[in-house]
Image (cartoon, rainbow, N blue to C red; front, side):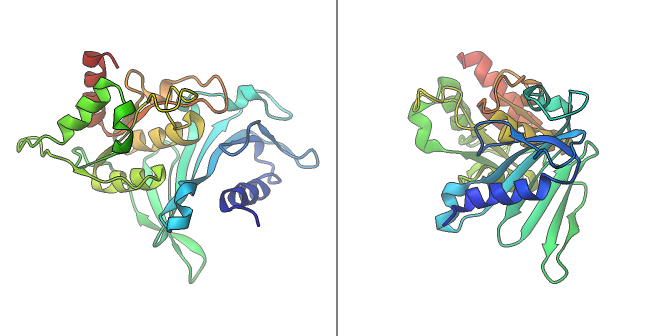
Length: 273
């Protein structure tokens, strides 16, 4: 039997390979660039996607999702190339995600704000349910896998400790909310106000930049966060400014309201992150 994440990959590929809009695709589940079959026309765009974010949570019936991003191609015509796929997030023309939970929700942006649509199963259509989504200016929550704390840098530990320290004027302490599915944690924080942190860690020497992939996770959600009034950083650089060198580059990620993200960058500067 095909695993659900493999099934999702196959379904998305077969739905998008023949429409004539794409010159190529790239997926978190595929080691190489995904070509458009030669019998179908190619188009102006590149689709990047994580077919099933949070797939390790499937057996526990925890909310999971699909993350996607779209670039205009760089090359003039013909099959897409790595040049078309390896673009900075600033070049995105669209990004979004679908969250599969108690309801199925589509959230996306085309550089004119962020909107959310909820699937109405009775008619088989997504209906506008969240118009002009804006990320709250102040967080109430923080989302981080504190089980990895021993492998974090000093700046990361101090930042989370700061958020947990009571301060009446700033609204601290923040409450901990961590689902373990990036898209689910991000969606809750987008609506309710929260900052998400997944830093680099020393647990896995093969992943010195952390767990999250730039092209399929960090950049699309950073695009949405900024369109909703928030921000995203790797601690030193704006996520949307990062130039990918490979299809599966990884990056630390702090994403949420601008003030929280700026505060994290301050902790990184002051603590040698």
